[in-house]
Structure formats: structure tokens, C-alpha cells
Image 1 (cartoon, rainbow, N blue to C red):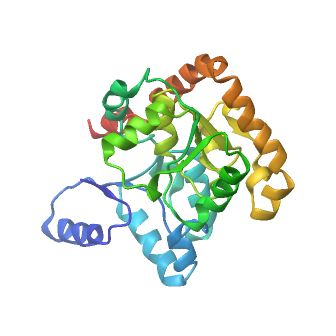
Image 2: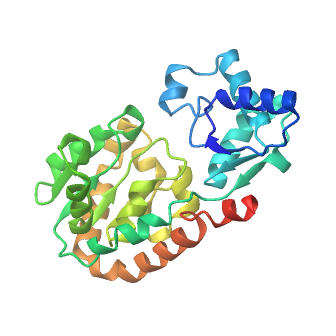
Length: 266
């Protein structure tokens, strides 16, 4: 059985298996939790004792705990360091079983590019959408689009990805990042802060200094540099196609396939 790690019914399954003498295997796939202070669970629940114990107990119920990135593992283990959990045996970085994305997006590659910059994230405080809105006002020569502000079908969203030159992030929370991978698959330049899972996954060509967007105040202190970076990407888009190909290869091989999970299942 493979399950979302935030699933208390797994505890019941483990109880019943033990009572019935049934040998089962349970793998838990951790996407986020209250242990991440920037995630909505962290903001709304925080570090209340009950939630720490609940998450720790679920971790113990799983034979293996799967994480997409080393960044996520380290964050989890730092928070639960005092819980005496068996990190060495139970925490495994496996990427995420989403190899189908590359194939499903193939038809949107090689589309004619426009001066479009996408904000493909959910609208939430940790995504810092105000930075994107402010850049839109300052750089009117480009088409800044917040995807969740539009009524887009999946096909319309994928067409926008195919047309976009840049996928932008100022995120304060990210343990993997699917949308920037989708953008890279169709040759949209990912523009990411040098922090979170991005620092581990992205090539240097696609990272900007973390302090440029660490807060609204830091953004204004570094706004000119961020604008220059956007202008540079737009004016030199074709020069990044080779790096985009290398980035796709890294993401496909190391982060967006289920090979590691499948090998454990076998």
C-alpha cells in the first residue's frame, strides 16, 4: 500500500494487520506537513504537541517514508530530531512518480514563444503573489499571467506554458515544484530563488539570489536586479535552450520518475 503520508487511517490498517497476523508493507509519500512553517498546515496548526506526535506516529507506521528531495528530508529530520525516529532506515529520497508528465506535455513543446511570464502557483501567502503583481506594473512590455486568476482548462493552461518564455517563482515554501518542471519540459525558462528545493534541483542558470525575494522589503531593496534578470532572460531567451535541455534531463532522471519507488516495491 502506498498512501499520502498525512493519512491517519494507515494507523488503523497497521493495527488490524498486527491483530490478524497479516504481513503488509506500507510506504508513505510525504508532500508537506505542519513541520514546514511556510506551508498552510504550518501556518494554521504550527507546532502544537498533538500534531507533532501525530506526524511522528504516522512516520513510524510506514515501513519507508518517501520524499521527493533531500531538502524535504532535511527539513523533516531537523524538526523531528528529538522524537527518536529511525531516519537512517526509514527516510528515502525517491523523486516523485510523475514520468507521464513529460510525455503528456510533448505536444506543447516547440510552440511559438511570446513575451509571457507565468505565475503557475496557488494563490497563498507563501507564494508571494504581490511581488509578481508589482513586477507586472513595472514591466508592462511583458504579459504577466497569474494562472489561478484565469478560468483555464487544462489544455489552455498547457498552451500558456508552451507559449511562455519564463515561469516565475518567489516562493517561500516548496518541497519539489511541479509547475516549474512542466515549464522546463516545454522550454519555458524557470526563474527561481536560490533556496528551498530549487537550490538542490535547479541548474545555476535558472537561480537568482535568495535575498532578492526573501520578503516584501527585500524585494524592494533588490527590485532593480530582479527586473534586470527578467529583461536578460527575455532578450537572450534562445541562449538558454541548451541549458534548458540539461535541466530537463536532470529533472527527468533524478526527480520526476518513480524508478526508485518501483524498485523498492519489487
